[in-house]
Length: 582
Image 1 (cartoon, rainbow, N blue to C red):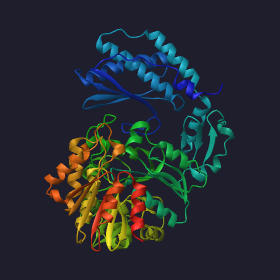
Image 2 (image 1 turned 90 degrees about the vertical axis):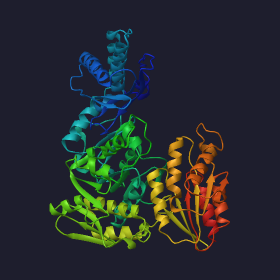
Image 3 (image 1 turned 180 degrees about the vertical axis):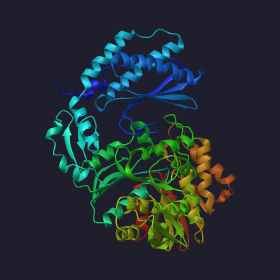
Image 4 (image 1 turned 135 degrees about the vertical axis):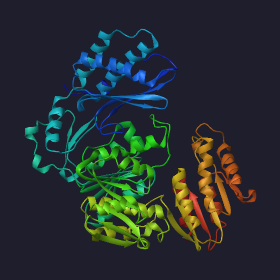
């Protein structure tokens, strides 16, 4: 009988008791390695008030054990994470029963919550009977056989609601979920994994992905990438949108033209579904800074670091973890993973880099404004930072770090030095190569920088870059979305004005009010500008980012510098700047 995933997904509704002390926040399938472990399965997030969270976990462990025993799921494992205001509860499950696993863990929480609240739950035997019914609808023995055969050969298997694939790119084959072959009928000799890298961090992900992809292309390989902007293979955009999760990865890795892949791996995708694959040749963690806290039980930057480091769980035994030795949270988390590491640092005297060199391990550093890569025996690659266009003559230190990360990935993936140097020197800060990331334009002798930076770490980095540049006058265009807190808006603004702009244009984001009234966010921005020493006469307002850019373009002249933080209206912003160049 064909499997109807829509029927399975909507087959049950597990009732939850209404309580402001035990709030059922979310449940979801986990299809790959994640923040807590490297199992497929399901989880629930529970917000807890007036209960000891450890007691909640203990009560749940009793109830999930009852449910798993009744179902005969003796191989299912359990896990949990306690966070500041709640708990995350997890179970592992077979690949073919992930929707059922969600119902199983929801049922266990139904029983737990009623027990803790002292209320009556649904009949246990009926709950189990309902679970058995949905399991019968979803189970797919052919998928399990195929997975077991693939695991034995260390070949990645990617599955979703509609398709199952083995291997990557040119070494892949795809079948419909209801049309799976017997493992004996698969031509295993033509299936294999490709060099795939996972790139994560708070900032620099997209730039690192694009730079590493350019290096792959310089090596003559059909290179593909996923990012928050699109899925790209060679010169083809497969689709536009935020594809920094498993869906974009599957789209790319199933394209038989692909030879090497670089996957942007964002926090949201990791926490919602887990990683897209179990066999990566390398992973890069660029940095860790506060951003999007308060979601999925990740309330602190330390927890965010743990989530980002899920990428390390997917690195193969012979793979390499490329890590920023200048970032304390990257260091703290990276030391605990037993994989080959390539530390990189802006400082040749960094202790981790020195230790790696002494131990004969790969590492990368900057010495006398040249990036040096050490392969464990000798320095085999050197390049002056000023020869890498995205570093802005070495002044954009965050892009010097991104270049070192890309070098570490490229070496881990077997790319020759000549191709690495070619890719580094040909990749530019233009909107064509790296849209929205430190894009520079010359307008009537003025230097205009456009960046999509949206968190304090990224904005402060851009401000630091512009502070170093000589300028007759400095302009800033700034705006923020309404879903930021007052404190976050103040912090973002404080970082942005760090390069001491002479003129600040504050733009309204009318399409991103998100619960605030018109004018609320600009007023908060202006308040912080004044507190940071910007003169009231130097502050202007605009109805939109494009209107703000038009204002700046009408006044800017030779020797001036402008930073455009374009969080919306981006295409129109680029159009206006390009038109002003002619």
